[in-house]
Image (cartoon, rainbow, N blue to C red):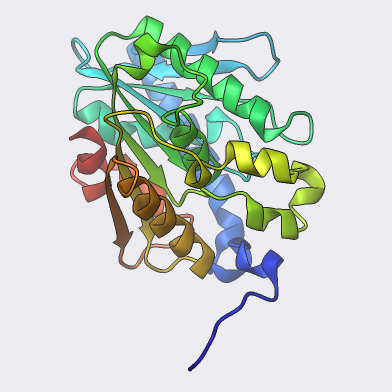
Length: 275
């Protein structure tokens, strides 16, 4: 019998070294997002830098469809809780906008200036602020660390007020990290400063979902084994806790391009998010 054990935890969670041309993705995303913001600014269909909290990075952008929105989608970016902001991801609103949804993208304070628990609270404030500006049902989506943060919104210890939780129809975690304990073994933790207590209270896989939670865990089939495991983990655990869940491994996608499906109205990821 062949048994498997992780010996290099830093490599297990390293994406860029294992993706051809991986170092080019951040600049490509930033350029695409900038063009998208310019287009929606010119059309008068966007609200930029809406303040939702007291922090310097506590702002969000909201893009609106042509006509009355069907509801609200909030997309939370990744970057291992220590990189990026909303300005690199604006173009991912294109697919949901084509389906008639308003799309909000928040920035949040990054580690080490804050703990992950504090980011959870900030994202809760951002979702609440966006919900006050757009009526209707709410759908949440997040990539990587953002997948962790949106699933935290539908845990029983959510920072969201009850009236906002009641409006959430679906949560989509894209390549999400749902159990923080392994990250305590990586160099990432020099910045994240996760301790055992925070791992236990901030890992969705160790928490219970709120009632009527519907969850899609979506990952690229070509991703690192740990992201495949983290994806399947939450879908499996929460199914056993009463949530409606499904785990999806999209063929021929890696950690960086798996999220790009949201740019296309007819991509399976966009269609799953928009219902």
